[in-house]
Image (tube, rainbow, N blue to C red; front, top):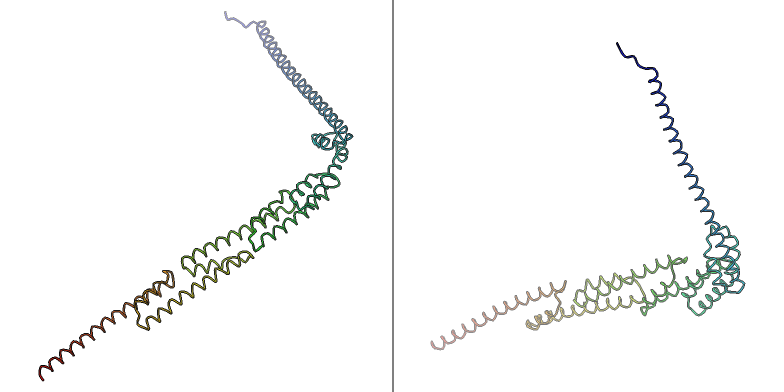
Length: 329
């Protein structure tokens, strides 16, 4: 006899599965609700903490503003400005800070500008610019900027006079023009001028030393080339001229040696000519002249030896001939 499924057991299994599924869904929903609640609590706590910090920051700014007002009333303007500088631009109190800043900065700006103008009057332009640069806000800022521009231009003119001085005041020019600080309007102009001066001065120094070295080595062509490569400058031009004069003087001396050597050769003084031509340097074109002249002297000496031998033979022949005649007669 075949066993038939029990309908009651099947229904029980079905409801057990449904119950398990519902319990699982309920637990999952509870977990989601718990997580969301935790998230909301965290967000609310963070928001409350931000609000608390913001209130503390506002309170701190109020305290600084009150301190600054007390310092301004007592005339302690430097301390007042230091405290106001601690209040950021994004503060809710920044408008009040700006009003009080003008009250605190105005006396300081007037004093700084007066000090700067006094320094400039005493020709301390670098210090004057540094003093005027303290004025970074307020009604005197534009005036201070104009003063800085004027004093910077004066520094450049003074530096130019040092650089162009025929007494060689290059170091003074560098020191003066370097006094224009970074961040000022003419800083870029002064730096470009300084670079130009340094390159020109170094180039002239190099060419002058090369010309001197070549002249000492009797390389007149190189000395002349190096001297002519020097750029025009009140300090270097006289030295360039002197080098060229020394080159010409030396060239004339060498040409005189050649002329004196030719005179000695014409008089037949080969030894003196050889000694004289040896005084030419071993640099072009004098070395070729010296070699050619010495070669000519050697040829003349050989010719002279040949002539002397012929004369000697003739004399001996004449003596022998007369001797034979004497014996005959």
